[in-house]
Length: 355
Image (cartoon, rainbow, N blue to C red; front, side, top):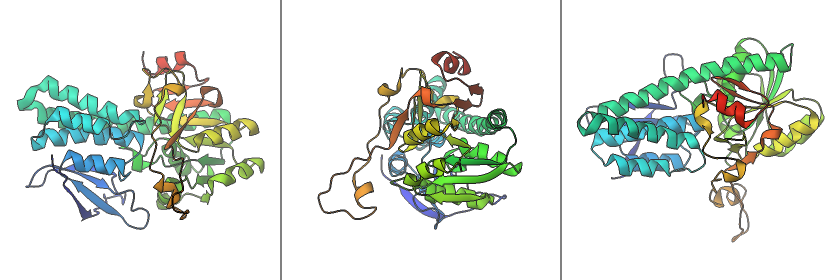
């Protein structure tokens, strides 16, 4: 497989939103088009992937990111390999290994491969593309359902509305086929006039909060304020946070949740200050085969992402895990498209996943 990737001008949808991912079939052959999230918020540029290696590079560089969207990228990547005549099994392995913590990526790949195998080589390309599109539609529907369940939960936990919500990393339409996970809940509350303030952690070291959540909040006209990650403690102490809403990249069978590094300290702060801490994620992010948080493989990112952010002395070593793990006893509830798990228990998670 080669490595074919090009840039193109963005073509917003009719409502002004820019899709994070889309499949196109120009005369020269099918392509997967990605909004390059490393260029946001100042540039809206798309990457055109014509083969799987280009897509893997986009995944590793975080040009495309976010658990549900990685699942879609994985499925469409298998469809791309099938349509372009590459070895589907080899392509699937490359995609599934691109990022180890986000379980949705492997889920999307495996589901697409299963459709390909069932259909056979001749009908495989059409079958796997149909499966990727079905997963895309399911993710959009899950986003809508999570928004509704999340709003209902907040109404029970904090009657009266006017919520001041703290979030971490990015969980909106940039990570989903719909409006996202945690930020989908926020978006629904905003449209209902029930969002008083969205507190946006900058999210070190790649600033997904400052670059991406702020970008989405600004486009939606939300009342939002950006803060340094280390300022969250004083915000809690001042009584300015009503609830914490975050997403997830993998949820173990016991409810332990891996999310962007910096999430676990927020859960500790929330518990100390008596503030609900809520995880919003589709059931595809629940990995019942991973028994607990200690069993979650945490991706280690290059140290240069830390040392180059504010130039450090030559030779400085950096500890740069992409995620941390929050234990279930610090999580008030997990919101999925199938409903809410609270308290967070293995039995509750298994039930919500239909197991």
